[in-house]
Length: 153
Image 1 (cartoon, rainbow, N blue to C red):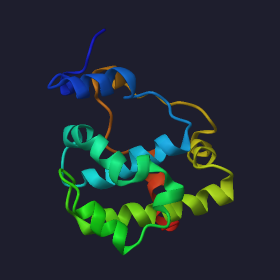
Image 2: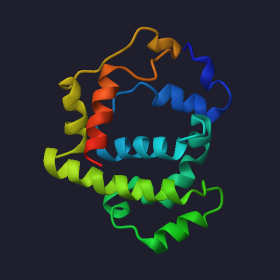
Image 3: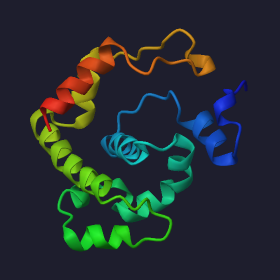
């Protein structure tokens, strides 16, 4: 298998590349996990997120949005005190807030997957250069999704 150069640094990144990167996801929990890893990544790099993924899963109940939805101060303190965790109260609070918004979208559309895939009418888009890791940071589709998510909180 030909691999992108960005994943060659370690085994976890290679496994992420081979098994997850670019694979369409229709599972709400997995979508929540990826979105919340993006929240945690802000200002950092994706390799760090992949390395800390198990810590995130432990801190956020395996990204169970039904549980994260009701987290309070005790949970925030527990997460902040976890060894290896990114110690950003704002990021942790953002994950909790996003779980609440995620639930509202699920209530309106039946699932987050239905909502997000509605932007492409269920079609997967591949961009030129995708196989080589050359994906634009943003485009018209991502701008529409981002604007709608922001509107929803």
